[in-house]
Each structure stands twice: as structure tokens, then as C-alpha cells.
Length: 193
Image (tube, rainbow, N blue to C red; front, side, top):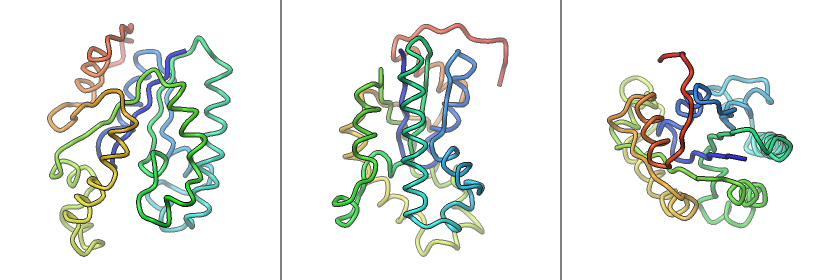
């Protein structure tokens, strides 16, 4: 079995790279998208319409199903994009009650590689549409996003076996370079981006 797990803050490219890996024979899942589907809401509305408890319960159910699928198909290649919260909780309250700890440990133990995707702050801001009109949703969006990135950095560092900066790469280029960095040979389908 081959399992690539992608971690990083929102906008680092997890969802895009997991999607691109389907062209290399991987079965992929963005856990955040699967969670939103399970809750019958778009990802863009999930954090507004669903409570933290509802999101956690749905995310745990998605992770349990994914882990069962991965175990049942040892010859298949898989890749997952994990939202930051699944990687570990930041903040005193969250550290006491981490609903993802057991599943995270299982996934990381089974993973061939855990890749921490990174990008420069300005790139993350642009990718998350936090420049312009949407930035009004935050008091100081750049500062808040920088603090979020800094809070998760030690968690991502501990979990990751490889790192890749997506700042100046297209999705196709980043995917190819990650596979090369990990010395993974794959047949590329005829689909182009």
C-alpha cells in the first residue's frame, strides 16, 4: 500500500495536489470536502452553518471510513489532504480534548509519507481570498493567518516526513516535483492540466 498524507494550512495546495495525483493512479480524498459532503453543506459554508461538535463528529466518521477503505485495498495508491485541525489541536482547551488523536496516529503510522505543504504568507492570503473584500471578515487577516501558521508549524514539523513549498509552483509542477523528491515513479495519464 502507498499512502501519501498532505498537511498544511489552508491555501498551501493540499486539495489541488491530491486532485492532481489522480492522474498518477492515486485514489485521493480531501477530508474537509468529504466532511462537508457528509454534512450536506458546501465547504465554504461548513464553518458558518455547522457547530464545531458537528464538524468533529463528521470528520471522525469520514476518517474512520477512509482508514477502513485504505486497509481493505493494500495494492491501491491513496492520498489524503488533512485539514490542520486533524493534524493536532492548538490552544489549551483543544489539547485536552483531541477527537482526532487515535485516527491521526493510525493514518500517520500507515502513511508512506506525510508531506507538509508550505507557501509564503502573501501566497496563502491570495489563495484564501483574504485580500480585498473578504479580508473585512477578519480584523487583521494577515496577522491572524500568520499566527495560525505559526501555531501549527510545530505540529506539522513533528508529523511530516517531507516538506514542499508551493509558493512558485503550478499544481502540476508541484505534484511532479513532490513525486520526484519522494523517489516515487508513476505513470502519468494523458490528462493535462
